[in-house]
Length: 424
Image (cartoon, rainbow, N blue to C red; front, side):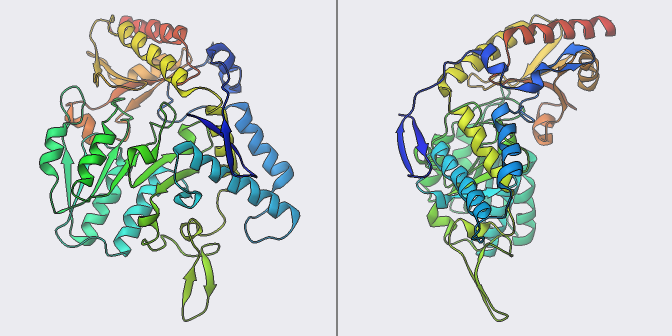
């Protein structure tokens, strides 16, 4: 059952939803009204970053207009007001992912910093020993590969990779084979940004916990499209970025179970994470401040709270159903184009279609259809090992959000036909 949060009372009441209508939703996003090259913008690059509703833009403006002050330590009116807004946003995140406590919610710059925080803090805690293994999958974003590689170099660890099949699916049987007493951490993407594959993360966590292995889930692509309940998933860490869930850039979230966060030392040192400092010794604040050194991205946190307010004003199932219909229609429509091949054909997918067209480089596709105001992504999508797995230099990727509509897929289809004609 879904609830809305009363920030001041820290209580929850049963939530009533706004009716989902895509034309009504589009009115909330001012950028969708603009023209690109004289054509109406067709924004299909949502896996890279989402657009922002007016309510989020207003939250940013409101903070700098009426609340701008540093937080936590000031006793004056503006400081207390900003602190209330910032910590209110933390409570919204806690409710959004269903964490046990607000102290389990750490504000960071994004999913990348969250993963680096876990890697470096566990290293400082001497959690890893020579020869230990970290397990990831072949479909990981670079942000869930490189931090672990750096850690492996520092601590003489081994990075093991769960393969994917030709449909772009996590091979669970191979995962089970790779788990062992040497495995000290599993770090897996929830939904692939390059393929749209939805991984069986609950089963992944359950199997790892049979070996008492903690699991980190990269949820950057999941939170805009599906309900996330960290208690139900039972993951030990969950990370996501604000800018992909209709919030601003430069803000993100690390959820961690208290039992881990309590034992992990600070990632960075400085103001706001200290309790007392002498030249001989420093003691640290309790969670979550222990991991939030320095002046944070205050307005980013507040605007992220506004973004979650906006998203949760709708029934997430209605959003998912709408995006599923876009994915189904887009898949069927694009496959009508001769020579077009979709990369990533799992039966469990979210709103991503990665594709190639015979004889045409993806960069040329993206450049040409941009003249029609259509924004897609081309390249390796920060998943170079995965793209190489399919023996490709790059793909073109169309990714959908709640504000996209069927007609925009038709525009994409017609633009791709124009590209085909140009190259034949």
